[in-house]
Image (cartoon, rainbow, N blue to C red):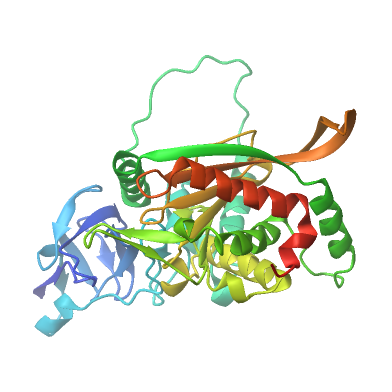
Length: 401
């Protein structure tokens, strides 16, 4: 028998420490090589750590929420035979993807016995479900959130229902760690450091809705229907040609504003692991159909943890939408280091005055935020008004000025 020490690996990009998010094993457990033993997180990404050897766990370092320096002891094993080469103790787990802040993505080691995202694993642990008993419907038997939900629903249906209007007592303390910790940090920094200028404008999208329905009716059977988002991006591309100060990022270290000619649109996407912002690159060079396809592809990749680092970095302006939960107005938080974000609220039919008469029109609010240090209120309002004009007269989205 011998003692094998596995140290916190160097996870790249200047990482000096990583946060312990969850231990998958405890002292005394027997593990096999490549079994997932822990999930850790840097400021850039979450990574599942596989066991480098087979053996019995002798000691672990750090509880969930603790920071462990790179190169320090993370876990110790008792192994049979001679100890593996020392270099193995510093081996770095190979991540599948690595997004940049503020967007986050959990990485899964390809060698894990059970293929599932960290969010699915956490939910299974909380629900008392052994993932080895769940059949995965994804590629290679990967367990999706839907697969787990089906199992949990089955267990819940078999359990007795609680009494109606039963009194409930007690509290639950939830440690802020992992993805939620990084999101909280990024949001806090954005609101602390960026003076937000908020601007809300209503848009009559009646004509846009008619065009959207007309184009959807012409789509091939089985094709995904067009949403408002591709139209908004196409209109935004045209508007930014005359408002380049809104298609920019702030380089605080060099004290520069960098205006981009290319329009790389971040699409704020809610996922089981938190907020991610996949990027539609070179939106200015894409057709409406191409925009719709790319938005759909990137959103699905982000939700399924398949988005690459390149797909999650480099946006120059962000669009965020709560879809059917869009509400009347919102105050979106700027996706630093960008200087502008456009929020899409829910489109609803309501009575408005048109030409002196009351008419039913489809109305939608745009809720935007700008970095007031670099975008004046007048310029921000002018940009949104130009966007409103394009959306209210959708033919102008496709006409050259």
